[in-house]
Length: 435
Ligand code: IMO
Ligand code: MG
Image (cartoon, rainbow, N blue to C red):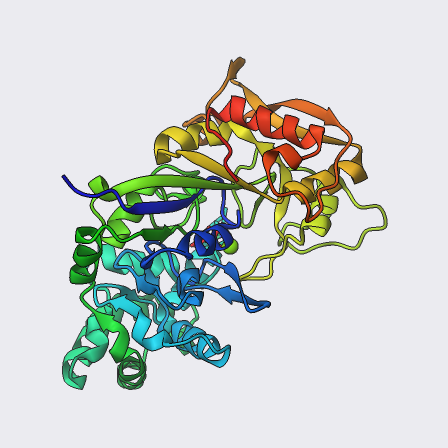
């Protein structure tokens, strides 16, 4: 029998639920913290000695000196972003960053041409995804196509690395040529030199992670997987095609972290008391807001409900600074997330902000079902690309809002209306709320 020592933190909606904060909290007594999916499209905020650190690649657990932090083989890493993140962490005084950070040599590398391709693919689409333009999709497609450059490759002799880069960029260069992006055509010599210089900087961290994981499981050490992205952004289980290019559901994070399923102990689903989404795609409980078709905030005198939530929740992207689309809590998606991601319990962030929103708007709503294709349903439908119908939320309304101050530490301390909100979320989702 294998010891169960793995806790997975998984986003239940479209990202930005506050996974970084909870992952850091879980990492307090962990030995190993792992990022398993995505890349610098993620933006996780953690606090270190009063400083707010925005992390995109390094697991938030790095702030605890006893942890080893792994960037797993399921991720895609922009080495330039990673180098600046390491420097930022060292400048903040976090000890032994380079010796505690382990990058799987199998991790695929995002290079400038992936970001250019991301730009090109989005431009060519009638309905763009609204990606973060971090090169995530193009890097994963090169990986699938078996022409990707991996961390190990950055350590190869120059001629060998250059050969790989030439092979990987042949078709991409043609695409740049044909689409008026000649300035993006890859100069293999320059890029090889650049790759070798970042490879040299990252060399102390690039390694085989399997023995580290084996050792931790064998000795029943606590392992935390800091999920990135979320259930509805999952390539196979989310709102395809308006998704990211990895599998942020629990099973995908285990694979991306190189962890055996038998070692899984707990899955914590993270959500916010109101919901948000960046980029395009369905969002049943979205509220009207003064955001134009390019995703920019327009000038307004009287804020709409979506604007009020965005303002009170400071809902602007950590990675792209884009204003987030905002709406009411969708507890039906949580119910679907429970069974696809195997969520044991929930953490609902921003309950205090939702109380303020209620105080301002006069009420708070929770989506507890959908009206879809003439039926009332209690799960997220699978075929909306076929029916072209976004499920219509059925709401429960709580009149008023609440105020939560720092003296409120447990469920019992919560104002009555906030307790009622939590109860409705639990009943609809069928998942206990723990935090
Ligand atoms: P964290 O981990 C919010 C969204 C993008 C876009 C779609 C595809 O901070 O929750 P991509 O660049 O991945 O190809 O974009 O996915 N997206 C996120 N939204 N938080 C994230 O990460 C996201 N990662 C990707 O906005 O809609
Ligand atoms: Mg984010």
